[in-house]
Image 1 (cartoon, rainbow, N blue to C red):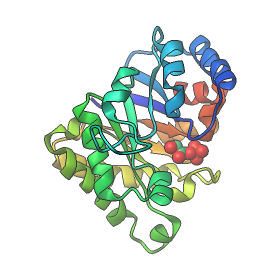
Image 2 (tube, rainbow, N blue to C red):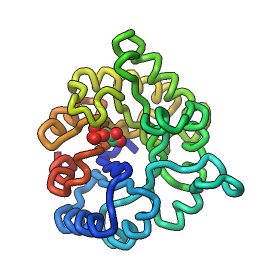
Image 3 (cartoon, rainbow, N blue to C red):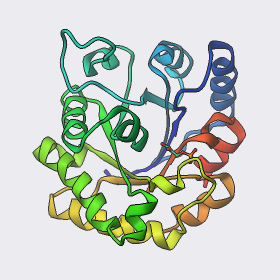
Image 4 (spheres, rainbow, N blue to C red):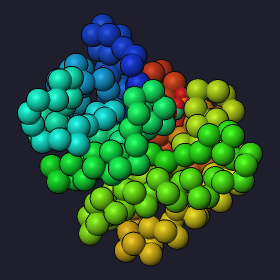
Length: 244
Ligand code: 13P
């Protein structure tokens, strides 16, 4: 379904005390709205804490990655079945930081998306070009290559995905894509999704989304919400984005 969705990606931030404060402020501040969902994707060790704090609230939670493997000798990995045990509704896959620092290839990202969906977890598949790729005029071919790898891997399950467009040059830089730049890429992604029978997938924008720019981004036709990094660590800022 093409629902409105705002997801916080805490990245490698937090601690038990800080999380408790943040989760407390989120639950006391957020009033669920029909047709709009809010979720936080926390580091693995804090899934249980998120589950305990959010289980009785309208806020969902998830992980920032998932293994493409089901079980076995994969030291350091966490399977989709494990995430299910902690009530995860979402798992981010293919974040540019995973692609850049941990070597997640298009094929691995596709396999991770497939593993999540097979376990009943919504994979939030990230795509996005680097600054060099944008300047070389290859934005469209890069994001479509990344999306196609996921679509191939999940085949008929594509309507169950969420896709996030995160231009690498806009992540943590304070340099947001303009609503026009974001919409242009989202329209391209939407067209491809439609051709795959998945036109109703929620398409999120991510990259320096703040309370003061969220509204104009989310107002665009093919932008269904956001994947929020830095601003998701402050309850008031994140809630303001969710309300936008
Ligand atoms: P920032 O919102 O900090 O730019 O991060 C975006 C992001 O990478 C979310 O996944």
